[in-house]
Image (cartoon, rainbow, N blue to C red; front, side, top):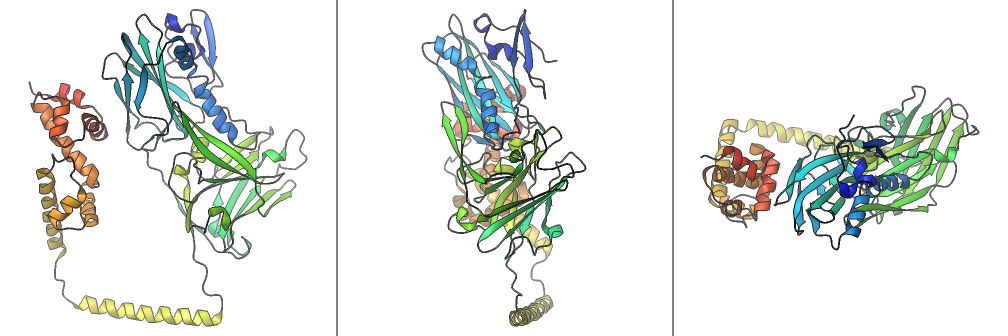
Amino acid sequence: MAQLVRAPRSHRGDRWFESSCAHVCLRNRPSRLCASRGLGVYINASVDFDMNHLDIKSVIVRASALFAVAVFVVGGIAIANAQSNCITFESPLAGSVIPEMSCTISLNVECRNVSKVDLQARYIPEHSDSQMIVSLGTISRPPYKLIWNTYNLQNQLFTGIGILAEAAIIGGAPQVARQEGIFLTHKPVTRKDIPIPYSPIGAQNVDGDAYAQDFKGIVDPQKSARGTVTWNEKELFFHVSVKDPSFYSNQPGKNIADAGLEIMIDPTRKRAPYPTESTLFFVVPLSGAPYSVHYRAEIADGAFKPIPQSSHVNYAHSVGISEFKGYNIRISVPKEAFGRSMPDTISCNMALRILDAAGKVQKVALTGDNVYEMYSPFSWNDYYRLQKPLLMNSLLQWGVFSAIGFLIALAVYALVSKLRKPQLISNFERSEEAKAVFERINAVIEQELVKKELKIDYVANKCGMDQQALNNLIKRNTGFNFINYLQYCRSEVAKERLRSSRSSETSIADLCGFESAIEMEKCFGKFYHTTPYKFRMQQQVT
């Protein structure tokens, strides 16, 4: 049971505030109940995805409605009661993508007589479609900043997280600010590289067992599904086969138009956490014509909303239904859908809409444990086109094998000739040389550390090296690239100054080469999971 607290007098009767008395809402419940001295109100803190609808607009509508209506209603009330809103977000802003393990929340508060600022967030727990609302803490004095350690959260994708800041004004109405659509991409994602074989006539002459992908999220052991992707000069061909002994088309109470296949393609492979305008969505229902869905991100006044727009497509497709056995879905996506040419590698995901015994749609995908990962290009696997087979006639086959044999003989001769030559530099000598070069790089960085404009090209010129070679050498020795290593070195110097001097954080940041105290604070959060102020309080020499 979540802990309940008494709502302030100014917010009693407010559905959002009364319901968010629970600092952490319970998971996987259709509703949340918070009571305060006889007052009972409900908040729906789960994303209830109605699987009986074909398009995926309900995912966005319900997710945004949860936060914008059930969470941020208090914002509209507070702003309506106040003359002007004097609290705004400096960071993070709507649409921000945060790859670090912490999120720095910074507010610009111009209100007078502020007693405190409360911060709350809405996010998606791991392996769940339900959303949680948590209290991040209270700030009672400037600077109004808070570092939220997000390392224990999963990646927040598709709709992202939302943050609410509420300033309590002594003798006045509370002031509210919010930011939605803040995406966390700090957790590494394991993506597969899946080959796309060439086939001049779809998937008919392709070994299905060798290239097919299994849909492993199907709960019913009697059901199974496999998907295959092939290519030729004209199209990408998708084929999904579903085995379902309980399926038949005239089942009472069921609409087979709700079932079908969703295909999601990111031709640019930019790994955006939400669908962009370049992302391709295609839906093939078991009954009816296929259609496409295009997304456009709308960001305004702290709100983030991916706007879908659907349209029918005239692509070659077929749906074959076998009563009490299952069905097959095929669709060809022409190369014109990708622009000028079909890319060699794409990010892709496929999701099946399967009817359960109650007639409801269950979604299972090749990638993604929940709908937020399922519809996010950040999580999708990479599909790469295999080369078109060259051995299609005997003359070409003889020529290719002759060329390969000649090249192998030439390679063996070159290898034998090279092995006969003495090694000029031993492995030990090479490692000692690399060590000396790295020490020289370190010396240049330490000498020029205070220069804010220090760049990799300057260090590379000083060391007489190529920029890429210098960056690779630093990464092999430290695990950081040049920029992160430079920030780390500056942070180490700043630690010593914070520990041994009483200079201000701004002065120390300037002396260590940081652009500002805010940049130094972000680096401390990245490398040490703390702030310069807290570090000084704990480590300063008296």
